[in-house]
Amino acid sequence: MTRVKICGITAIEDGLQAAQAGADAIGLVFYAKSPRYVEVATAAAIVRALPPFVTVVGLFVDALEEYVRAVLEHVPLDILQFHGKESPTYCARYGRPYLKAVRVREDTDLLQCAADYAAAQALLLDAYVPGVPGGTGERFDWTRIPVTFPKPIVLSGGLTPDNVRQAIGQVHPWAVDVSSGVEASPGRKDPAKVSLFIERAKA
Image 1 (cartoon, rainbow, N blue to C red):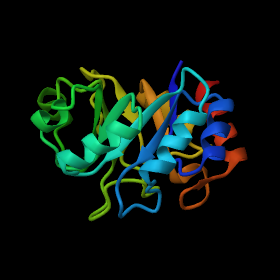
Image 2: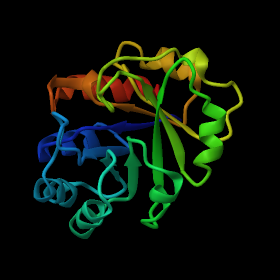
Image 3: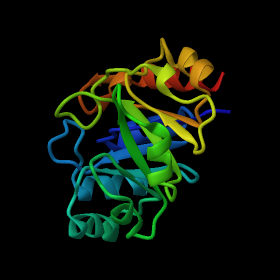
Image 4: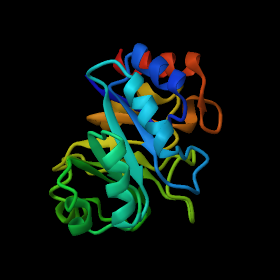
């Protein structure tokens, strides 16, 4: 069964609703330029409120090492997600499982990315939009993904309750990751969209 991550959680009630609707993971964005940015204290409160067995993913974009370590001191993150130009060495230095986001362009060699980030738990494949590291609501051409891919795929970019089943049928990812596609407004989730997305992803 395909796993589901609801990313860009900024409020306790949104995190709880996602968990109760069946989300396998939630994403917390520690990137100040994002409309889904969450302060460390708020993130810690969200995690404290979650029921057990919900994976907490922390998203960073070319962050200073000191900042990542400061977040880890206060927020018990299960997985780190790196959405910038972080090197494999940088990603591995925290001793935590990590996902490496790849913004797919026409010339992106996904097999080379998988080789470069061999230590990643998965590659998160997202749409490339100049100057915006994620959460754009844009999708990329899924046919660019090699049929035989050596790492688990977390599919992101432009997913909604309306296209998630098609995406899973075509790509067969380990997990799907949605943010803007289930929002009521930037940073706040629409409970009905979240529930419908999870229901269709797991159908």
